[in-house]
Image 1 (cartoon, rainbow, N blue to C red):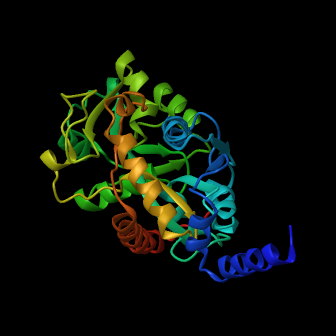
Image 2: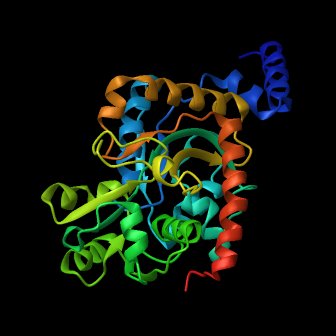
Length: 322
């Protein structure tokens, strides 16, 4: 290379370096040019983990690069979310995060991130349903039956501040009945005690309780969505029997670190929406998981609304991670 050719090359490199990051990204080639890490802040087998792997398969095909689901469990999702928040905003670290780690956990403990400041909302993916589920031998066949017979019946959740816990509190407050919360470390432990008769009810996720419902040991009396669940069409939705009750809806969505370039956010949003539109995408999801098709702006607004709402509820209940 001669001095005459080096000068223009140096000038081009200097000009590219002076460009804002999104423009430099475009000058360097279309994103992504290498594998993308999709952090899943939960253990393998979790509903969000299942959703992440379905999404990763689809996006890998669309992007021509591997999208690798990377489980980083711990602290109710806070460990994995912190990794997303600390990542370089280059599009090569994204995350599939459930709403509790963003709008509930930060109000209960000193999370190492601010969800409203340290993350970039990109795309809604799914929302998980729950049911008010009772031991079948209780003989209670409807929500009014349960409320009338509640008498401080104990119910389980997988811990303080989980969506099932808050949903039973929302139901209890909305319909004014007594209930005794029994927190467990896991849904599996609580479900075992429900089947054994040590507790009487739960608002756990539909995919957790469905096998026992189908086996006859448990009965669902109301579903948390505003429409009936296709898997249990005979079970009324909350909108049919108590429309004043506004449950928490456990959504899962894609986020990147703060400062993620608008071009990448738009690409993730558009390709996630295209994935959700495929009929086989919904067919691969766990039972009770519906589509949550929100773009970046709508997802950001939903996160702000839920952050304020559940922050107030956590404060009213006096909850903490301990």
